[in-house]
Image (tube, rainbow, N blue to C red; front, side, top):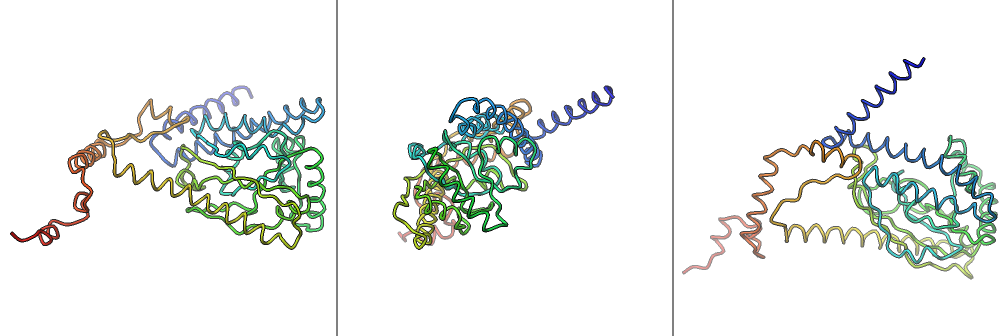
Length: 347
């Protein structure tokens, strides 16, 4: 038995090492490696969550800090291993309590983004099926997660009412995804919102804090690409619901949807401007393809595998752009030589 176990460990370790090295040069290998690291990090942090919750339960009122501690642990562990940097604008708006934090939902990578915004004294809402997931379910239950039966409307409405009272009593924040499912959109956008979060906000008279995570499809597409990089987020000013009734839910939902769409578009426009500036003002030296996290460590050891002809091509492009330094279309190769001769004034 011991020999079999040692053989399994040896084969597993060797396979993981080879996969790590391959991830420096292969997008497919990088996707598999980062998927493994992501879910391993999730398992480790779920185990930590059980410990955190048990310890914090010994101190009155501290159990609801479990999600904050687990979130920061996951952000540190997974962010480091995968090579992700998550930055947040408007963090002061997360101090509003009690409040509903409504965030766009792109993929399972959103857990990393939620880890960046989870405030102290916060809970989450999840479908009741997650309660049965080993480690994750136990951590969620101990940390005060609100489990909801989405298939039973009467039960869901009753749970919503209880959650609102609970949040006001303990001054808690709760993170929800108003889209109700992952979008996997390749361009900035939102799916239609479900009304559940807005019913809760109006019933309990809770302010809504829209939280927007930029479209990160360029880094992660859920199928073949799982690359490291920088993800930007923004917490927007709270939208009050005091005095609103059920008749205002549609208007409120549209307002939040429009607000979040505008922020997604702003992020995308900033990214486009950066791309344009990089094209118009290139550095003299071509920038190498950079990897971070465990794949980045492997890349430092064996390189990213860019062929020399690719480096020579980058050198030539940079040299040509430096020599032209122009602003006319022909300076950027947008006008042919024949067109230039035709447009030239006759002497």
